[in-house]
Length: 323
Image (cartoon, rainbow, N blue to C red; front, side, top):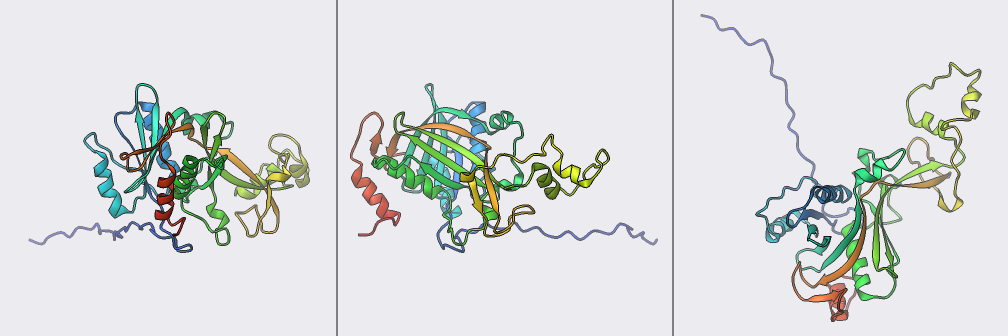
């Protein structure tokens, strides 16, 4: 008896190969720093969400979906960090008194322990804004890092500066593309209170002298509703919601050297706008350990120890000093 052939043809399925992230910057030749963000011990719900916000902040060179288990210890993460090229650990923990954030360099340390006095999640920051802005392509490139108030001459602040500068990839101002500068991380140190304000902003440019109505018209691909207008010029000059340009601050304007998007053109002035996207933290450096969450305590907020010799050897190991 003849067999009936199946009339449905199997479609061609193209194999998907995940693109590997580069480990070395093709411009500067430096190793790209990568990080793990995980918890030590049990965390409450808000701190667990803060952990996810920190992972999103460290994108794209971090493990966003890092799986954690109760039986995992620090050695387990360290064994995986080597083959994957992970250079830094960000660890959240919670005690009865306060939550803590530890920033460590792998595999030999040092480890900086910060006490979290206050924090706000990214969703809380977005809910406090009238028009929150957080597009998905915002996290395709690493953020810029800006440190303020750390030049007091204290050795533990110099070590903090070096640690945070090395967490994110270095940039070359001569070859960097403006389209990759989408976010900025700001750390401001108050020498009076000894607290560090940790902020995370998105960067956007707006052309100077162009009304908001025209900007939205150029950026969007929709035809505006002109039924209630007598002339096209009324659309440009009409006052009302979103029609007048915002006040431009001369100190916050730059002249572009290349085109950026559909609105910002080269050789024209654009206003730099920062909008906070979170998370937000208020930190205090309380301890510096020589090794990876171990070793001698070389700085403590509650008692100074021998510190200058360690900073000297650390700078030599990082290539910042030469004998």
